[in-house]
Length: 115
Length: 116
View 1 (cartoon, each protein chain N blue to C red):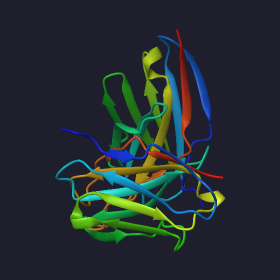
View 2: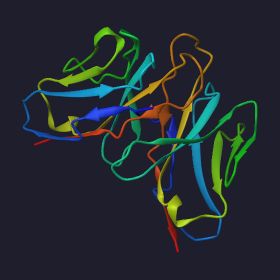
View 3: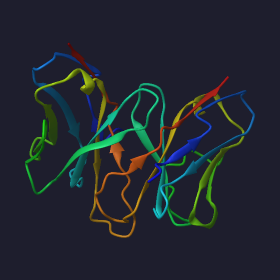
View 4: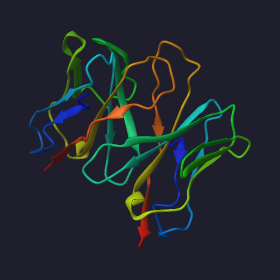
């Protein structure tokens, strides 16, 4: 089966611009997660979708971040306007089962650099 | 406030010897723990996990030990191989909250280098 796909793999934008990251989960996985790793720090939770619904968005840093999951398939994460501190690697992950302690499958991430 | 901590940013081990990676957590509500392995330019991949009802779980060369009273877990790799060189992340979650999914809390990672 195809894995979790993220694009772009890299994005360099200027402060104040808008960037949209995309994630295609494994087909059939209802759960989709976004995480972020700022350089040298921990991988931090941003939000969790179950199908098209936001189950938990407690990790979203502020209202400059907007996540959507159209029709319960792929998801986008938009940052508008981007700030320097938004730089980092954004990981998407998906899993089939809700509420269970299974490891997710992660994508390879989008490295965002805001200059 | 970081709830999962990996205090060693890096570790070097000779091939064939044991690698021990450590992780501490602060939240006593965590009841499931995982280790992920990450190569450069790739996403983390699931390696091994352990439930809080156990104190040890073994999978081939990888063993995870859990000490709940100390809120400490460790990953042992024996024998270590050059292909094990990667960044290892410890993660923890609380599974009791059904139907809300599982937010994982990750540590900062330990970069393991296995020297041939």
